[in-house]
Amino acid sequence: MKPRALEFLVCPIDRTQLELVEWEATPSKLSVEEIGRVERLGLDLALFSREIVTGVLLNRNRKVFYPIYKGVPRLLTFPTGVADNFAKQYAERIGRELLGFTTPRQAATPGEETVLRTFSSEWVNYDWDGRSYWNLNAAELYDCMHFLLDLSRRPVKDKLVLEVGIGIGGIADYMAGKEECELIGMDLGHAVDPAYRHFGMNAFLHIVQASVFTPPFRESTFDLAYSQGVIHHTFSTKTAFDRLCKLPKPGGRLYIWVYNPASEQRTVIRRIIMLMERMFRPVCWRLPERLQTVALLPIIPLYLIHQNLYARRSVTGSIKYGWREALHAARDRFTPRFAHRHTEEEVCGWFREAGYVQLRCASKREYQELTGLSILANETAVDGVRT
Image 1 (tube, rainbow, N blue to C red):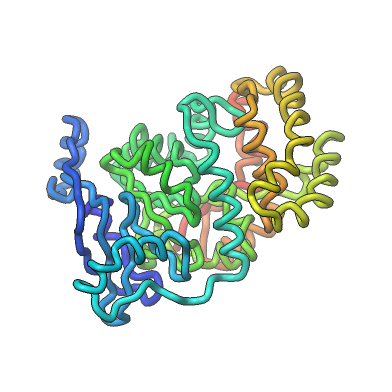
Image 2: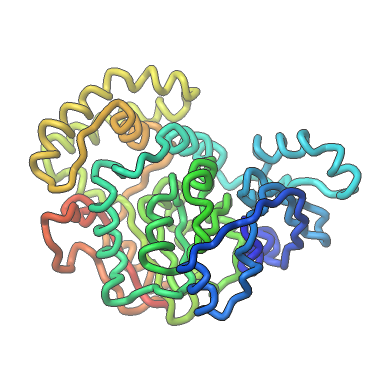
């Protein structure tokens, strides 16, 4: 965690300012380009000069602390294994310096502990090799995101951006680097750990573990907030949207990508997969991780065959699946507890209800078929401007 992040973070319970207590920090070496960006923004270089590896964020009024562990602020409001391990590992210091303080013990949002477990397994075991992302090569996916976020027409250079659900963090790193924005990447799960390991040294990327239902930010903070394929995996996509839509500034933008029910009916293969999902997912999400992997073993060869013999021929930029990619895809399909689907009309209604204007659906925009967008634009992707 960089000291700069403290300027954006607040207690997710009551939205009050947090106090930083550093226990371990390492110096950060900024590139000439990064120094230039900091100076261009008129910011203090000291805010980017070190990484706080271990420490706590305090809410003194509530007598609660949030761990900074392995470089990542852990701002979840319900008990987690990471917070409990931190409390045990640093029990002596906590008892000496934080007498009377505890980690937050609020109840989790319905299903959130299951979602944390499922997607932590999916992303922590996936890791990052810089070559591929989902079923596309990384460059193709970045081009897709550039299009979907309309960055040619609405650049985010020197803007403050939020990504909800960063997963392994590759898109967040791309945005903070190539698009030259300052980005906060938030995720509920332990994917924040490999994300920080790979991309935490990006001076303009701040990685936070937090929930979309209790985001640790003040309302009207961001120039752009976006979430790509995430909030439909919560207990209520609409409730998650209602929390998220308050975070952009007036005049700022919000972009949401969720599953569309019609997408699963496009081909015979997709209809078969959807039937399998309806039968299998309600059972699979309940299994321990090892049993999930065992249960997915018969399905993984089907992903390998479909991707390597069919999809790579029909979609430019598609990668060749190995075991890692096929297992990741199978986990994403069959292990989430929730996987809601919503039409463009429904999601546009949410935007209008929240006071957003200038709505645009990706499916209605002109795009090149050879960029991989034929995959992404068949789902529900909507963006709008907050009034």
